[in-house]
Length: 332
Ligand code: BTN
Image 1 (cartoon, helix red, strand yellow):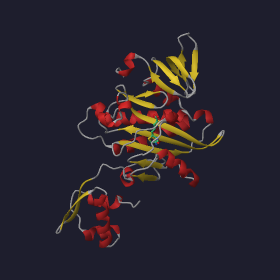
Image 2 (image 1 turned 180 degrees about the vertical axis):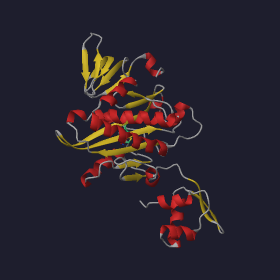
Image 3 (image 1 turned 45 degrees about the horizontal axis):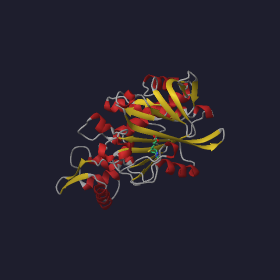
Image 4 (image 1 turned 90 degrees about the vertical axis):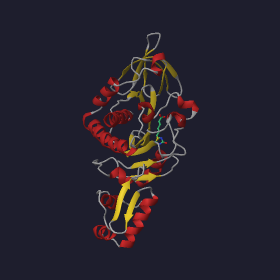
């Protein structure tokens, strides 16, 4: 995709700039400038033109164009390369295709819409256009296999901190990979691994965040459980997906590097402190079996310890948690 960062910077200075100046500053012909302006308008940028004064940017579209994501992004790894799609089956699936091309670590795939968005345990992830974030980051962590599941928690921590920073509300982490705000699921994480047994090549960190949907935008089956940040927080204005995405990439990088250098103690402590799971009665399914009990602890290895009604302690390495506390539906 063509890059528009430079011309947009020149158009966004708050004063008109002539076609001649644009051409000189960009080192291209006036015809090429005119072509770029035409494309930008087609992409949704509002650019006013005055025959005497030149051009001025009035408004940017609510899109996750790569040159917008890159703007003011101070990361070294996350988002080094960005692939952007208006529509794609699934960003995780695209990331998998890219693995054959030895992608650089931190490659980011983003889409406005997914037609076959995937959730955990083979479920679908509802992915309508324009109101949510769908992203996958490709990572190459040099970690022993046992540590890898904990990277899902690292992503959950990064996302919870992002939302706290941007919107001043801290979502809770529902072990192992969901974020809940005021009792509703606002985000899910799908981590996938590639490589041989015991030798990881790549880890794909797919994150979906419900940002601006209205309650009625969600399918009836999930309307009670899911929610968007905007509707849960009762915001009149749309929440900036770009702001959230940039901040997430920044914080994810900090959390990831911290975990690689110092281990997972801090991420685990955060997940325990801001947990939507611990202390609650839960049902956990690992795809084969369902365990019931009270969620007692998140262990150092990232697993969840349940206390069954019999008093028996059960260790669950990974799974899907259902909160069965009556107050869990409303009280978070
Ligand atoms: C879950 O809660 O089940 C995990 C949902 C993960 C959804 C994201 S959206 C971006 C990425 N691409 C996908 O197809 N899935 C993940």
